Length: 64
Image (cartoon, rainbow, N blue to C red; front, side, top):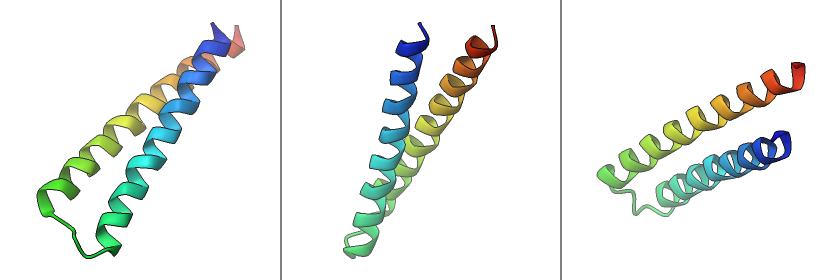
């Protein structure tokens, strides 16, 4: 179970990084669409919440 949560946490963190870079690339390229940027920001916040939740669960399991 711990290994599964560890892998899921890593995937969530990589997802956050991917969405962050997608937003940065869109912003730097000058093709920044306001609606698209807002959607990427929402996805990033959601993925960060999932990553933090999974990390907290992993820490709770590690203590027991």
